[in-house]
Image (cartoon, rainbow, N blue to C red; front, side, top):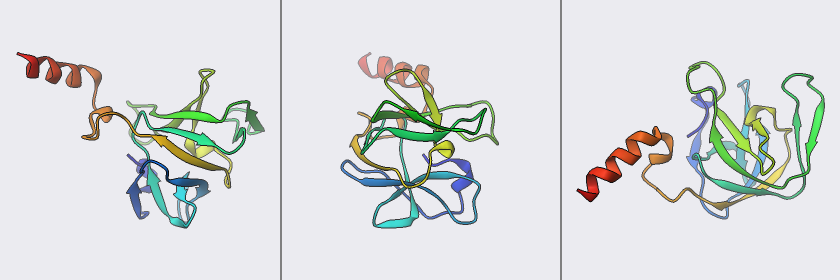
Length: 140
């Protein structure tokens, strides 16, 4: 749910209509989302969660470190780098196919949670074949 680098930060799961702000958490090397009214608690998104930003998204380009602006206001949360245990895994995927690690979002950007993944049991974090196999087994 939340990146490994936030394991020592208070956190809670996201809910529909949560108002979020991108922030840098104290005593960490990472950025993520917090509730607008509680910036010290990380709000953890599950893969598939859809969010809408108030304005075009700005982030630090991972290669050039220049501030980049995407002409998009909606994104879907996803996990990246699954085989790298000490890499950041939280990212946003935009309609144009761009994938931006959460740690590269500029702080102070506001968003709202539009929709959570359909399965509230956490299947979105599991490999697809596990979910599919379980679904097939339930039909039999």
